[in-house]
Length: 168
Ligand code: PNS
View 1 (tube, protein in one colour):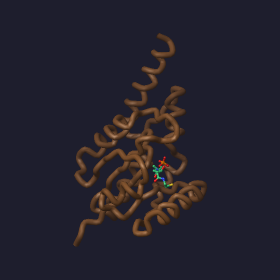
View 2: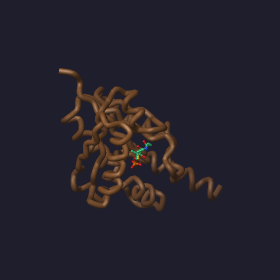
View 3: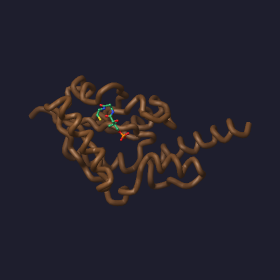
């Protein structure tokens, strides 16, 4: 049987346990998942592209089925270049639906051969977002259990460094 692969795109600034949960669920369905890290999110990211890619690579270092790559330009072009016809997106709540629906249909308009698969994360992560994690960590709150341990450490380093810049 040919290998079934999918792309899981996002900003991952930073990757959360909700993303990790979707990737693990995706691996029950697909043989290989390419995690596609957007190089230029609209807002200035907290973590550089290299930092975001490296963190995800470290988290999945032992799983050969997971590949992590940075991309820019159109997602559908990246999907085609990666020989993948499935895009995975996580849906946490109804509030995600409108944006995701628009994006999926725009991608279909651009590339009718590419399908979007929606997956729901564990309900424990339905309130979780990278944005919320950045805000809480930036204000000194705990994000233990919401992001992988490695990300907890990297967030603490970031907060420490930015405090030093502000109060040298
Ligand atoms: O984690 P995010 O920020 O919600 O992910 C959004 C992402 C990266 C999937 C989306 O912004 C994207 O695909 N960007 C690439 C540009 C593109 O293809 N745009 C057309 C589809 S809307």
